[in-house]
Image 1 (spheres, rainbow, N blue to C red):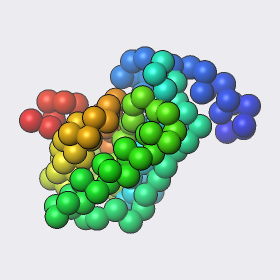
Image 2 (tube, rainbow, N blue to C red; image 1 turned 180 degrees about the vertical axis):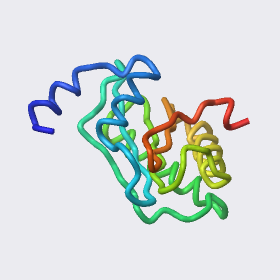
Image 3 (tube, rainbow, N blue to C red; image 1 turned 120 degrees about the horizontal axis):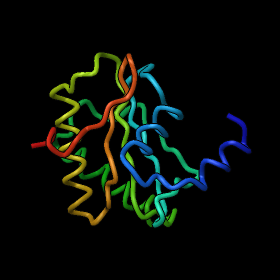
Image 4 (tube, rainbow, N blue to C red; image 1 turned 30 degrees about the horizontal axis):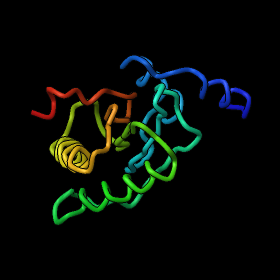
Length: 139
């Protein structure tokens, strides 16, 4: 993707779930390895020019890992002026949500909510594509 194309994408608001998923498919695509990504959105739903990957996040959200990550996310949100965040959990494997997918999505979502961070979406990048983590999946 050229810088010009990236600039154009930044002007398009991610105003639907389908738009969020399409952007994640374009930018991250299918899984290559286990890592976590964060995209930042402004108050109009436009993506800020910052994408943050984290390859070495803990295996589980236990022991305060989710809370510590939410604290760093909060700092990033403040410094960037973001209004919302999108999380992408990249990991090899199939489309089906795993116990660890759900554990991390629940824990980080709850930690962000407690910190006042607006999570727009959570998605999984897997071997065959990208799937949405729906609120019902987290019940």
